[in-house]
Structure formats: structure tokens, C-alpha cells
Length: 313
Image (cartoon, rainbow, N blue to C red; front, side, top):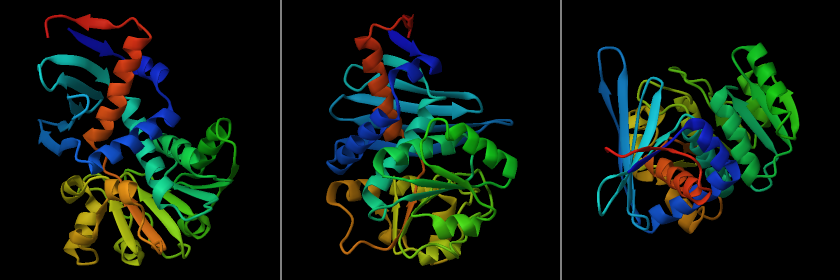
């Protein structure tokens, strides 16, 4: 019997603080060899594209299949021993939540000590989760925001300042954000680089979370050239999906053998002395989907939430 969990129900079962804790543990489990995964694959239809990826966790023996096309966005949880579908979960909220949480984990381990200023390039839906996650792991005092559309940036600040207490500031240029930020989040759907890195501080963490396809580009080669240390959530996923890292490695600005998986940092720590300029490139991986999806399923059962059940699957 498969349980069906809707997007509104997921919102009632998990928040950002819990998501960050779950992903922190998940990256420890990856480092311990407890997880296996298949990077994102894409299948083009007549006009829309199906995206698929999967992960398995040893402790729960659950297999997670993440699939999404246009507005349809789900995970299916299978039992790794018995087979059969345990649950189908709408990921409309959870996928954004776990993407933010991954940046929160990265900031916990990679941000400069005593980081106080968070910079946001791209004040959209996903940026709200980025702010919430990094506020969970860092003592941020000021948040500076730049967007291509000034009104959208202003509206973002108006909305977020009601829920996140900080000194909010809208700035006029990308250089302004770069020059102020201890942690810089680039959260766009751009196909051309937005951040050049020309004005970055001497010590900074740059988190790029939108360039998860080879046609997408958020950070310029010039920014990557300035980095002392590059980290990604999954090397195999980055090799097929990260438009910026793929181009940088093809141009010999970076080398795949020098790029570090986030689980290595979570398990062993940042090299000492700490590299001054660090790039975290987030692809979004099924391991993250499994972590939040299993928790939501467990909570729904524990709270005896009224769920749809499909017996024929």
C-alpha cells in the first residue's frame, strides 16, 4: 500500500531547521559509504523534459526515485529489500527546502569565521530558502540583495524582512553585493554568468545554486579563477550538470581532480589553514530528496496524518 503525501501536508511536517540537520547527517552518511546514488538524467519529450535521479540509504533500505517534468515534481520511495512503493511525495515545497538546506550545511563548514554579511544575487523563490538555511548555521547580521529588476528585489526584502530579522539592504550593482558579502549566494536561472568575482572580499564563500545544467551559467570563469577551493554536493552530478564547472574544467581554469565533494568536508573538515576564497556549487541530488522525504513519511505516520492510500500499487 502506497501513501500519497501532498505539498501542503509536507509543509506541516518539516521546516528548515530540521532539514539542515537531516542533510548534515546525510552528508556524514555519504562519507561513511552508507549511500549510493544515480546522478540526474534527462529525457526530452515533444516539448517537455523528464528529469530523473535516484538514491539508496543503507540504514533505512529505502530507494528514492526523484522525477520531475514541468509542474509535476515527485519522489517515489521503494523498499530496497521487499520492493514495492512505500510512498509518493509531492516535492514542490521539499525540493526547494532541501536545496536551501544544502547551502546551510555548506555554509556551516565552509563560510569564513564570524561571517556577518550575506549577499543575495537573484531574489526569487529559491532565495527565500537560501536565506532561511544560512541563517540557521551562521550568525548573519546584514543581508544585501541585488536583482535585475529593482522592484522585485525591493518586494523580496519587504517579504523576507517580516520573517528573517536582520539589517536588510538593497544595492544597485553586482559589484556592490560582492564587495560586502562574507557569504555570497547566486540563485538564478541565468544562461550567462551574473557574478564576475571582480569585487569579492579576500575571504568569502560563494554558493552557486542555479547552474545545474550545462546550458546554465551563474558565475564567470573569472570568479572561478579567483577561488582557492571548490566544493560540490556530488562530483558525478557536477560533471554532467554543472554548466559553470564543466566550462571551467574544459577551459583548464579548474581540474576535476581538485574539486572536493561536500561529504569530505563534512566528515574531515576544511583544510587548515582555511582556503580564503571558496566556491560551493550545488546541483541538487537525490540523496537530499531521500533525507527529507523519509523524514516526512515517518512524521506523517507518527502523527497519524490522514493520507490518501493507493492499494493497487
